[in-house]
Image (cartoon, rainbow, N blue to C red):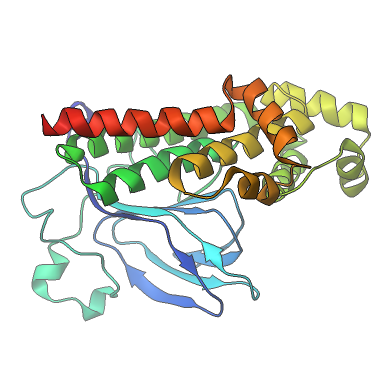
Length: 303
């Protein structure tokens, strides 16, 4: 099929929090699933290769791929995810989410396997992607989930556009990483530091802490990080904290003080100052604008 005619169908879009112990037994999907590990850790096995999934990791399960998931440790995992067909088909509405292996499927179910269009010459996405900016994917995923759950008139149109935007971002992110990290001796170090920063958005981070933990001078750490991410490690940490704050303001009713506490700000005033400096409006103003946009959008749909 031509990518000029891409028209996705979203089967399921949801945010899941799963308590430990838990395991998803090996299965094969008929469709695609994008799974973002937002909190917790899990062993994710795809075609006999096991990845230790951590916050900020993105997994793309493709049609017909064997895979299983098992939580690591006692903490729950949070995994917003989307099941979709890249091209909507006549039977898209009939196909469900599979929890079966091939030998357990009947003839009709075996006919539901979608062609894998994301493993070709034009677009070739891996099953595991370490994101440079997880907050961008978080924001887009939760936008899709919110739209799927609300089901306002013409929501299908918006879902198609939102999913295409997300896939395009992931494709470009993967291509950018491939160019940037080719033959880069510091790849693993930078990925470890980035992973550590992403896992500690709930508190303040100091440059001294990163320097001591990863045995690298502060000045060289800043140099490397600026070269790759265009910001210092602490600026990067602040950026993903504030992106997380934006998502929490958009998609929860959590009081602003509680959001500030969960993200490790010293108080609501420090949170508001940092937020306004980055976003250009206070957290309260941002929430008001977001709700106003959605109210007016709802009115337009029903006129």
